[in-house]
Each structure stands twice: as C-alpha cells, then as structure tokens.
Length: 93
Image (cartoon, rainbow, N blue to C red; front, side, top):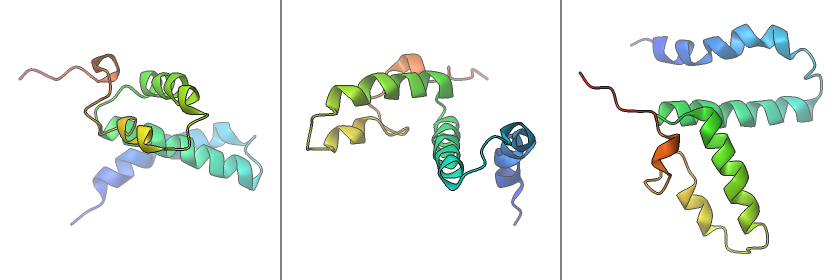
C-alpha cells in the first residue's frame, strides 16, 4: 500500500502555501481549508472547479430563505442533477 494518490492531491496545496502567507488567522485557515476541500472534491468527481464554484454561488442564494436544506443534495459534486456544463469532458481512448 502507498499514499501516492493522496500526496499528488495535496501537492498543489503545499506548493501554494508560500503564496498564502496572508492567511494568518484561525478563521482564515478554516475558510481556506473548506474552499480547498470543495475544489479537490470537485476535481475527484470530474468537475471543473471554477465552474462548480460559480454554479454553487448562483444556486445557493436562491434558497437562502428556505428552512428545508434538501436542495443541497442536488449540489454535491457527485449529484446526477448537476449541469453537464460543469463536468469535464470524458476522455475517449
């Protein structure tokens, strides 16, 4: 067993750490970790991260007054309800 896949997944984060020196608070670090986790989960589910964030930021505000949070099931990266425009094209072998 090895952890090569996990090391590859966090390589970009480790390289970028020097650029993120302005994150000098606990809240900044927590926010950064949440955003990074969402981006990596999107990549792992073959989504385009930028387009996925854009989709989330347009859809979530539509439900701000809702008390029922079941709409979130349609926004998770593995949902079949996500638009095709945010999915990476499938490679043809």
